[in-house]
Image 1 (cartoon, rainbow, N blue to C red):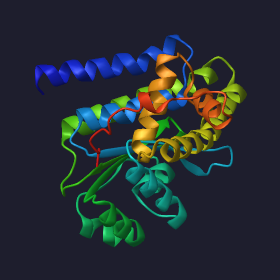
Image 2: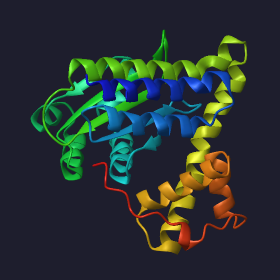
Image 3: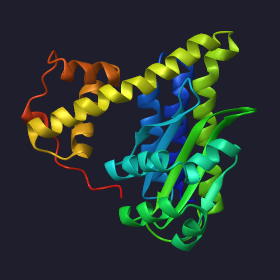
Image 4: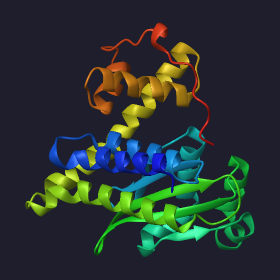
Length: 249
């Protein structure tokens, strides 16, 4: 691991663990985690699914629209590494399209269409509690190297602890409510992305980058900014639209 990569990994841990000592936006924290994963590790896209109050998985963050849709397709098909990692509480990997095809034929087809050739899924787990899964996608066949797998596991553990921290103080109901609010906020975020993409004639990834930058610069929760956009109380002018970022996929 190079010195620069070590520094960036330390920065990622510092950024995520900062949520332990301050109020935090669950969606923003998890989005930061998947963004860091694609920056630090040998992966091309990432996403996180969380379980709602009915123990049903929902996609909450993704690094691109393609990885977001692949997560949704897994849920619709009822199969895939992300779902298996959640159900078993163990890390699930598939190193090539043939392996994926034998285990999850529907997922393998959609994964190939999206351009992914291997996957590594890590449960968000604390003892017996499994909250969801972190899913790392690669464009090329092969397994995630041991260092990356260990570091990704550690980041996932920290995120899980942060989500569960309210429970340690006897506020399990509050923690579940917060988690459900985060899942519900995804609807508002998707609506705002669609509105901005249509209004400014940009793709969905660029629309999300615009929304996220506005929330950060105005020190707002991501869902607050999203609701402001859809309710027309917040106007983000075209002049603030950033240049489209290179695709993570």
